[in-house]
Structure formats: structure tokens, C-alpha cells
Amino acid sequence: MSNKVILVVLDGLAYETAQQCMGFLQGLAEQGRATLYKVQCELPSMSRPLYEAILTGVAPVDSGIVHNHIIRNSNQQSVFSLARQAGLTTAAAAYHWFSELYNRSPYDAVRDRFTHDPEQLIQHGIFYHQDNYPDSHLYLDAEWLRVQHDPDFLLVHPMNIDDAGHRAGLDSAHYRNTTRHSDTHLSTHLQQWIKQGYQVLVTADHGMNVDKSHGGTLAEERDVPLFVIGEGFSHDPTAQPTQLELCGTVCQLLGLKDHAKPVATSLLSGGTQIEHLDNGSAGA
Image (cartoon, rainbow, N blue to C red):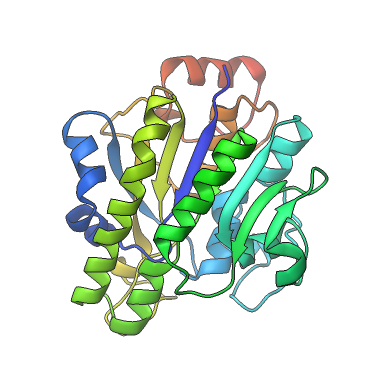
């Protein structure tokens, strides 16, 4: 069984803020159409290391991407590389650090901002390089990529929540309201994704603290949300997925075989788990 998968990474969104301010997503959960889990991010709780952790299932201390200023291609197998090896189509509307990790490094805005290259790991991309690039525009970029290229795997990565946290801190109206606005913008497109049968994961790389930063071990820096939507998920309220299991879980949903990535098997529906056992993939 294979599915089309959309992974939304809401940069800098702390778990409690998601729980309190993501009204549409919580509405789906109340109606039994989504399930929210608390996930602890890897360390350091910084963006580029955790992009790599989410997309590869490898901890920063092992991937070598240990801070935000390491500018090079990933040397790990990722959802993008595994999908491409299987002949699947990939796309991303995301911050330019994803382009540097999985396509070309360093990022050249003229060359890379709009990417349509079947030879790249991210074949179809719209990348941005300003932290205040509007989430409303980013979701439109993602929807354009989805409609135009029908990717099997689509990464959606807005930055405004993280930007608000750096400007005003965790306990601020600006941070909370930016979260609410991003939830509203996402709701416009998520309803269409649900109707068309996508398996959707909505999570964050890291949280935020009252010092207007992150990077350490505080609960508000490490605890992030994971909403899952779709029939490919078990919606088991007792499941305890980890951040390093997201890569393998997406691979399972995509029907990828022999990926050797850890998988949150309790997060997946029976059919997906059975395929996982039958094809011999690692990581149960």
C-alpha cells in the first residue's frame, strides 16, 4: 500500500502553543479526524540540525549537522533520496536551508528559488530566504506545487511562528497570534488535502523559550506537536512517536521498501504495519 504524503513543519512551534492556538487542527481532533501527539525534539533544539533529523531519522550528533551554520549537502539517506530511488516525485515549499541540505549548496537565489529539475532530490521547489516571508504565501506556493506537479511527497515549511518567537518570545501575544494566523492559512488548503486522501503530518522542528530563542533542553524548547490526519494512521492515543521515527513513518506511508529507518509502528494503521513486516524494512 502506498499513499501520497504531505509533511508540514511549522518552524518554532511549541507544543502547548499548538495545543492552545491551532484552533482548526484541534477542531479536526475533536471530531476524530486528526490525532495530536507530544513529541520531544532532538538536541540541539535548532532548526537546521532538526530539519535533517526529521527528514533522515538521524540524530544531529550522528548526522554532523549540529548547528545552523553548517552549509553543506546532507550525507544521509533522506525521505527525498529514498523517494527518488523508488521513482517517486518530490516537492517542497520551504526555507532555503532545505535546498542546501538536499539539492545544491550553497543556496543561490537566482538559480534555486524556483527549482524544477527531475535530477534533484527535491525535484520541484519554491524556496524562500527571508524569515518573515508570509505564511499565507508559503501555503499558496505549496498548493501550486501540489496542483502543478502532483508530488508523491510534499514538504511544507512556513517560518512566521519561529520569526515571531525570536522577535517577541514564547509568552507573547505576537507569538500566539502568529500561530493562530498560520493555523487559519493552513486550514484553507488542508481541507482540500483531506478530501483528496492525502496522509498528512503536521509537526514542528523545535519550540521556543521566553528568552526569544531555543537550542537548549527546556521543555518549551523541546516539546513539539505532531498532528496526524488520514486513514494510514492508527490514531492510537497511547502511541508515543519520536522525532527520529518521522522519516521512517513517512517512508512506510509512501510504500518505500528496505529503507532501514526507525518507524513509529504504533502510529500506523494495520495495513501499513503489515506491509512494514512483510517487506522486511527495519525500524519496528
